[in-house]
Length: 576
Image (cartoon, rainbow, N blue to C red):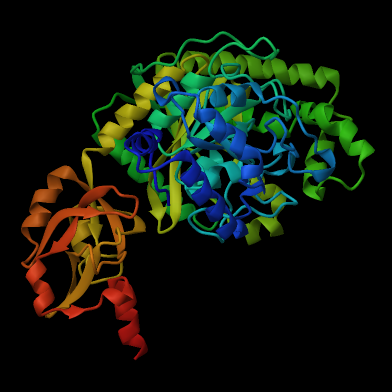
């Protein structure tokens, strides 16, 4: 879905001369127009405002600018000078004279802002459907929600229209859409990143976030943005990000609740994650997290929701009809007469006690939970907008209330076109533990190997049971690079063979499976000639072990390249 998997890869392309910022922006602008139906943008990429940032690069040495020419998107509640900020409400729109502090720091480092992205109106939602600018579609399955409120920011990166993007996160808006679109979603400690120049939702707990494909890119953006900002009353001096190893990895002692039409798939994905962690040798402990669930409910089911009304109530009253009905319903809940000043202080005192409890629990530790317990179709959210949205925040709402930092990490897919993510939490100013823990978990995952299969070992075919027998599990569907032919090898049983062919090749449909490394040898030994396991190039330019075929097979095998995959070929036989 993305031509450049990391900032480092794009910088390498720039430095080698294989790509220029101008040509890349031209491509991205065209792509944004082609994928307009995803409703990613409110202000889409256009040279009318991008050109000055490109011109600036001519006098900025790439060696001195860690984000030189890197295109990034901004959620449309974050100011970019000269470009409207709407917060998802046209009547609220204004044109800022200055960049938000975080955006200014990125631009100073050479990054190129390319547009303002769609969001749940006034950052009030976790579903990505609460926008008059259209429902942002999931990058992997357009029927599903993208997650919110930073919906467009997440999908812009997942679809490859930006290399990274800024979102905001008050109750999970930078983590839920990351998990639903197979991205890293990084949320630093409160006050570590300046929030001046951002339309507030709940100013006391608002955070900026970044969506990336890799942890390394998230850490680089953190390095650029982190730091005290005089213009921001919420800004704090915080420790510089590094990499520290936690003493323990905490998992909830009771099975998390899962919801929605994919609850079983999400439960299985979580169980696979837990099993992998248990096998990893990492120091695992099981703990009670019920108090966090109680804290999460305080955000919208108590007087703290009045902070949203304090920020936006005046606008809502003076602009009747300007807000979406669901947005106004959420905001006006803050006017509940039961939410007295006394009730507010009672809630704050309760949260303070929970915060101290979380601090003690997470001392030198990280807590791992599902980022979300499920997802929904966009149609299901339309039919039940309040409960579906509430479900999406079960494992995110507590985070900022308890002054935690967090990162959502992509995991093996729960099913075809169904991303799944976990979130790592740590206590305030322990962001560096998240880096160390994330890399440890990635290292554990590297004890498994991804295998690309193109035929009888795919789901629903005769040899799928061999994958399961070798403890492999399905990760996702993907495509090879456009450099392979596909032939039918006579049976019994007939089976496909992928042959490298730079001149006659096309992308071939594949499935990626994850297999324990110690199972790969016995699996490979059972593969009959002319097939074997070699390096298969994927559509994103990376390589993974997978099925390949001896070149001479093309002399006697039936050429089925035009079908683009074994499944499509088999379907064509059925229809005859």
